[in-house]
Amino acid sequence: VNFSRETMLELMAFADDELEGDAKARVEALLAESAEARGVVASFRTPHLGRGLGEAFRARADAAHADDIAATVLRRLGISAAPPVPVSLAARLSGPRARARSAIFVAGGVLALAAAVAIVLRASHLGSGGSLREAHVGASSGQWVAPLRDVPSAPLPDGVEVRAVDAPSRTIEVLAIPVASAAASPAAARSRVVIWVDDDGAPR
Amino acid sequence: MRAARSWLALLACAALEVAGGGAHAAVASPRIEVTVIQARRTGGPASMDPRLRDLADIVKSPAFARYDTYRLLDRRELPLTADPPAADLLANGRTLRVRLVDTRGVGADRRFHLSASIDRPDQTPYVRAIDLTAPADEPFFLAGQAFAGGILVLELVVHE
Image 1 (cartoon, each protein chain N blue to C red):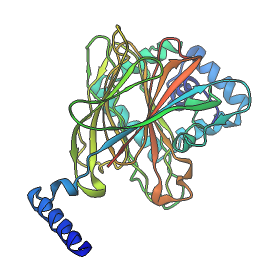
Image 2: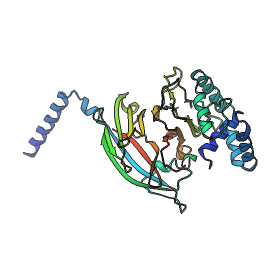
Image 3: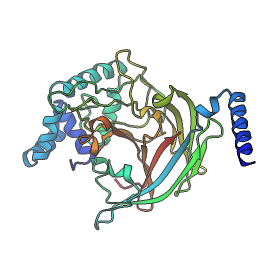
Image 4: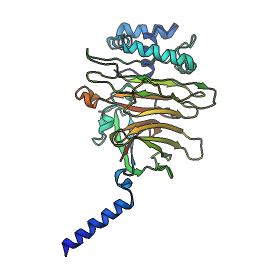
């Protein structure tokens, strides 16, 4: 996939039918000319885990008012923020025997703490035959997402677990990037966690 | 004579083991390996230092799409303790600090709870705190700091 993070965010929002106006037209134009973009949207719309995760996240995010964060992100990206667009997550299982051991839990309670941002992402690994798509969450400065408490029914993550990030006035993304060799060796299937914090003067 | 010395050494080791309750021998002191990488876009042929094996796994992600050259700037291993935190002066003059908060589990299930920060000289911190847990030998990355026309990517791995 060769899209920028901003484009991926738009594609995810489009897959959730949550884009409007210019942003929606921009994505539709991209979809008309790019099979890759269509594939990305289709994967985000894959039933089962992708949609299930989206709904689960939405329910949790609603409770935590996390939409406010996503709306701020989208405003920075020039996307219509009214109504607020939830941060989207997507994950897809491949293979008929894939099991829904994968879960990405993102949530939090938003507290109005100035100049701070935190993101919580948990990524557990898939069982045999499964693969985890890259997932990312964006947030803007000026808000704090409290760490997610353990979910009783969730399996303990066996990889790196990011609980919180506090970077004043900066945009933070936490990404779970599947390891390329995972398909060849399911037992070693893992994702790599990248915490990306924007900086003054960094190439955009 | 040599055999006698060997037996004495063995006895000494056994005595130390008993005195220490075996705990020190069973739980090694953790270290944190910090690899500092420069990512840039040169417009020329893509290149990556072959020593950056873990990074090679993830640079096809869209997040790294704008960079085509990855250079290893520094790699060092530091003791990972609660106090003082492991501190590494980065190429951009900032200081990465990683503190061991606690550990959970034993053996292969052992996880390290870490707190990390990146300070800027005479300014507010670039990152005030990152709170995470990680198993041993599982790399994770902190990316985005501006440096020399590109960014720094820090790869961190806890070793036992």
